[in-house]
Length: 358
Image (cartoon, rainbow, N blue to C red; front, side):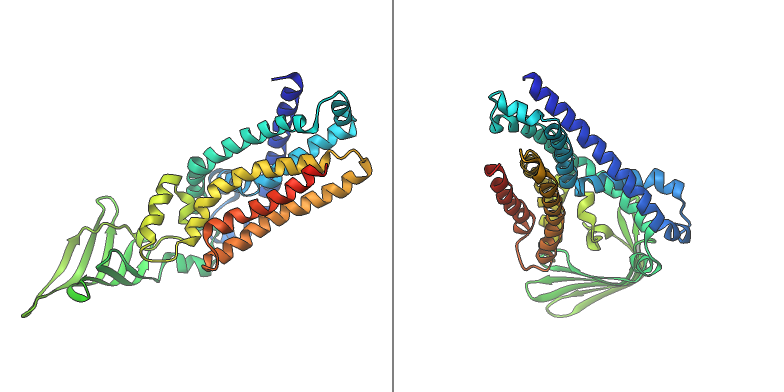
């Protein structure tokens, strides 16, 4: 690797780290000022938030807006080279623009690989910590009540089995008016009802109180009732009543298994969006690196400010466009893989246009 390559890679990575940290600190200050009142209402504190929430929230934020961070890093660093006439000197020495692109691509590859590993394995752990704090201290009273109590469960757990719970408290792991039904083909063969159901997490069992069992035979039915019954099911309350953002707390292997299970019962596009985005966001690093280089290395210095404005608008629009397509995917209007990768395809074409016309 030549001296010029090392110089570009080192300074570009340092610029990226500086911009990423700066954006996180600024975002934390703004977010605290907006959430302070809700923290106090939920018996939280800024100290707790700074220790147990914002370090993990920052990882999530850095990942979500990584395309903008990469783009700004390339813009700032390359604009500095252009301002000092270093780009012109490099090209005048016989080095082609394509050759100049190589260290930028190497930097993008290094950032992208790190982002991919974080997305697959470390970001889910950070999201789990972030969400735990959010549900405890940052929910509004309306959504906190909805999250902790009065959640109805009505789902199919296998081809022939169904579960119904009228009210389930995620905070206390207690449900009311539980019904379990088992079918043989289209014929109902077994019913288990109870006034209350309690999930004993330590032993991974359910305790049913005031229960009634009905086994339906061809000739007659068999009835059993009692005060309590211990029952083992293959599911947990989290699987029966998954949180909206549960997918972001799973590593890539867990997420794939979870999606395969959930496909039987419901629309899983919201989880598929998370699955595909784990790869698409790191890949966008290459797109915005080349886009930033193309816009900030123009030889006409009078065009630099104009091109920077165009680039920033494109970067923000990329995030907005991805969120919009994900909404359409969640509504099942378009496939998840298309909703997540379409912004990369469109912005990849735009990037190639600017690169070829450099």
